[in-house]
Image (cartoon, rainbow, N blue to C red; front, side):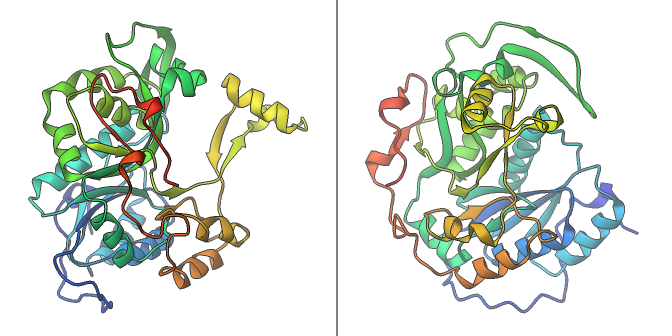
Length: 357
């Protein structure tokens, strides 16, 4: 019987799945970090869709996941090369544990000394919109570019400032105590975007090895939903000077998560906008179905979330049959300088951040 403690070893098997790979050697290599806590069959489909023997894969299974799912996924992954398991931890929504898992994952991938070029994080309910050959070719044309959503938190999303201005203590079941105000980091501008990212190896090495990052780790340990702001704030308030594209290459439809207290009220569009602006309700990703296929295919994204094959498995079939369609708006082009900002302390991004055309 497999135990959770011994799952950090590379999974190697003498029987490898017979998959067809046409990409020539020497192309861009990707290090994927995938967070999984349920839906093992859907994870397997995702993994097959993104697998390439020249890439590297690090899987984190939440500590709350059943041992049955652990064993099932480990047995499945034993058919593939370059696959690793990160020691399981409890990950709480909105807590620093999400950031810590990613930092641990990045460090693990760097420490194995693999020759990878880009880091991409995914969840078990994500799915690629393009083939690995396509994605690797796109990244090859964008060497040195980091893809992440980024905005000045105070001006773009002022309703979220309470996340970093208050002191939150994460527990295994949520947060303890009553949050209280505290002074933010001196001479630091807070940034926000989203959890999803494509980072260069150089960016990952800076985040893991620079002494400048320690104060951000110490402060954001006691914040709310830091996975949407920690990396952006570090990249814009340190000596990091890599190129940043204000785009995470993810197709997501955000809808209001109104909760039980508001379900009895019929909300108008105006109601919804004002409630979101006030911070009284939050947004959540819509579970995508075949009704959303035009949105997914007619764009320039590389991945999408979120999916639930118990609700609609057909949409994944449609996506896979269209893997090789060109990016609609950018035609798999290299991002131009006008779409880039340079990270680092003192950068004024709001006159310099541009979404891809």
